[in-house]
Length: 152
Image 1 (cartoon, rainbow, N blue to C red):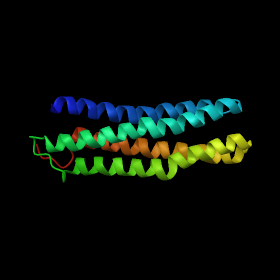
Image 2 (tube, rainbow, N blue to C red):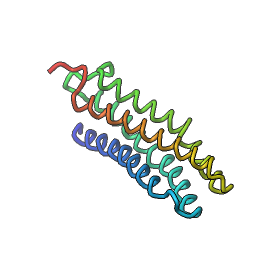
Image 3 (cartoon, one colour):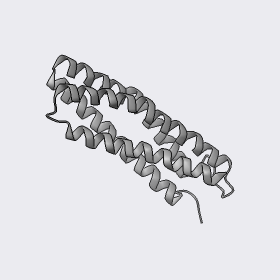
Image 4 (cartoon, rainbow, N blue to C red):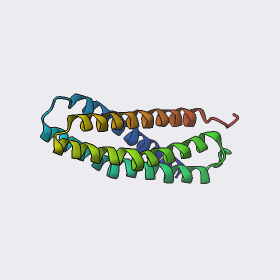
């Protein structure tokens, strides 16, 4: 059972991390595209955040907790890498709710209004949020692989 949980856990993080990279790359290629394409992409980013990132975060959290509970390797909720993982899920969720979703909505409104300055500001906010999330996820993955806080 723990192998299945670990696979689901890793895939959820891969979807989360890969989604961030894919959206960031796509956003950088849309500069200069027509308003309809930029509007569609802003809607898509919001949908990906609400559906894909939310599902990936929930799966990451549930499988992570289950892996700790099911652990026979001395892993506990107080293990450093587990705490880092929890912190990343909490911070990622907070960023999604407080920054990412509002920035997507700001971008949609800016595209609709033809306000290039507001669109640029929203785009920079999204790219910064994506970068912060990607760095945090990378730190979490490195800490998990290294099992920081566990003596071998």
